[in-house]
Structure formats: structure tokens, C-alpha cells
Image (cartoon, rainbow, N blue to C red):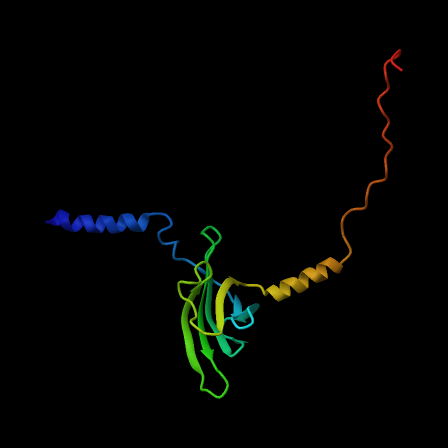
Length: 165
């Protein structure tokens, strides 16, 4: 009877000691969600950037990011954001049309069901893509700090042995 109680305890200890079992659930909180919105009427997409806790507008949708998490670098790439999306059409009261986690690698798993708009998560990041692009533009305008070129050197061909001229 005592051995029957010990076996499940050993199984739990063995599972807990497997490397990566506890680490698989670890994620890194990020302050910015990179989203993309699709207007189905015009067939145009628009990149959206939303800080956690702030609301961004896309058409009649108000998108609030409550959390944005990214897998650590040693795990397969994955980003997920908890979004609350409200629709405020003209002359109608606001209605929540989505509240939940969206995954960048599987946008169809938990998708926004809206007749005019689609929204999906691209990634979670700690830097603004707009700020990164602006910094790259500044970097391109800075003079090159590479070393000066070496003076041109004349290459002299090897001398031929006597009698082979």
C-alpha cells in the first residue's frame, strides 16, 4: 500500500526535475505591441503600435492592449497580446467585440470576428518601430566613422629569371 503512494510522488518529482519543464511557460513582458489592421472594404493594411494600457484607434475600433508577452530567445519565437477591442460605429453605442489573447504565430486561433476590420498581433517589443526607423535615418546622416583609405600602392610584378624575357 505504501509503495502505491510513493509511485505518484516519484512521478511528480521526476516531471518537476525535467529541464525546461518549468521554463517553457516563462515569458518576457514587453511594453509595446506591434499590431496590423486590415480594412476589408478598401483591402488596405495599416501597422499599429500600442503601448500596454493605452488605446489606439483603427477605423471605428478602439484597441486596448492589456498585456504583451514574448517568448525568451532560447524558445521558438512567439508573441501574444491580451487585447480588448471595442467598436463604436456612428450613432450606435460602443460594444466590446473582442477580449482575449491573440497569438502572433496563430492569428486564427483567437481572431476578431468583425464584418469590416481584422486585427492581428505581429510582435511584442520593447522599442518602438517608429523610433527605430527615426534612429536609422539619423544614423544614415552621420558621417561615416570608418578609417581613412590606405594610399594607393604600386604592385611590382616578380622578376623573371635571366634568359626568360
